[in-house]
Image (cartoon, rainbow, N blue to C red; front, side, top):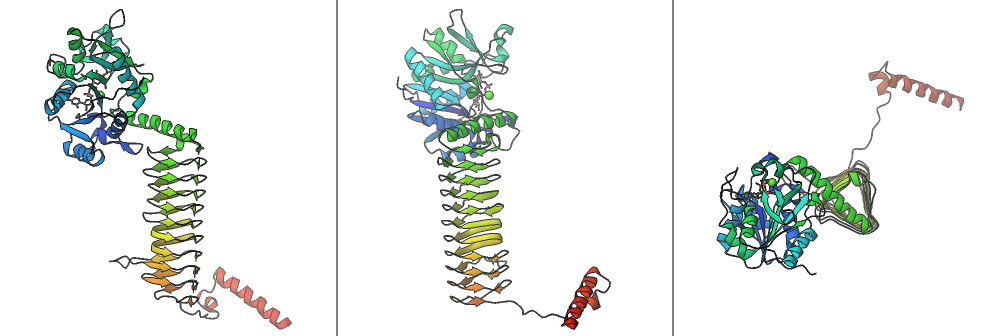
Length: 483
Ligand code: UD1
Ligand code: CA
């Protein structure tokens, strides 16, 4: 059966989430690269609802600002005072008017909920012709949840909140997920009739079930296959548990699509990361944001990539890369830090203890050891010697350095920007290059060496160095005498 398209999805997210003990509103806490509420919105969006509505209240500016920026298709409705889940829905319907068709109500803090579970709820709702269908689950410990009260035939009678439940009702293990499919017109009428006559003095949305049933309408339930999906996040312990579940799900999707993940327990991959088949991900790797990895690449161990593109058959080991572009067959690390604006072309190398920022490294060019390259354009087939520094900052401004094709920069060169080393030019090891080096020239910019004979014997007499020098000098003298 095809899934009926809901007229609206209403996401309740006005509550404070006090148990997070956080300056950040609960629904904005991050989980696998997305805010909690955005996970719910993504699942809701996949149902193709005509309207997407989010009820906000606590931390209005922050949550409202986030939604405006990330979900312009969602309408935010403000619930100034949080007087209960029923009040939240009533506030929406007073603002937008009665919604004809199926209205799905859900929460902003159930990030593990899958679209297919919501679809199954909608299917059941339509197939049974219900006025309301509640998504429920059998849980090992229902403490804190509303309980689903059924009659002997199994028909749903009502939902009772824990605080209002009798001991017998508390023993029920079928919990209310808080997620429902409603007939919009019946909901609009019933939600106005919800009282506050309960232990918490709130307008309970759960009461709508008994009201509709009392009116003679069909009330049903759909039991979720996996109770973990419908469990919300209320504190950071549950947040960590949810992160583990969601991460595992994402890793399994990647593995089934052909990605080798050596150690799923130490690998963390955000929603939205794209990995081609035959990529190998080694232990201790985190892939964040809009990271894209090409086929045959090897990532890790100990690597964190954020919004980084890695080309086919590239290797990235023990590296931190942020908004970098690593070309095909390029090599990064071990122990490299590629900051925003780094571009490694085909077969380029950023080796050990190398940091780059806003730097392009041309094809086959190598920056193998101990180098800082900031604000640089490096051509093709260039070799940058160990300990080279692109001196880009004069204390006030940043300047650019260009090293053209085929250049060879000697070890320990300071390239004081702005400066250009032209095609095929060399720099002598230990040079401080402040002026351009013409094509094919060698730039030598260092003091000529002078030796002060027997200085150590005079100035460091009695040291091991002096003793070693004396022995060597005596040997030399002997050899000279023999000749
Ligand atoms: C609610 C259900 C309970 C269910 C549980 C599942 C009611 C009366 N109870 O209880 O049966 O087992 O969810 O988690 O509905 N919210 C608003 N405005 C409000 C009140 C709440 O937007 O005025 C939002 C909250 O931000 C939260 C959600 O609604 O996302 C649930 O609210 P919460 O107070 O956590 O309800 P529970 O007491 O847990
Ligand atoms: Ca809750």
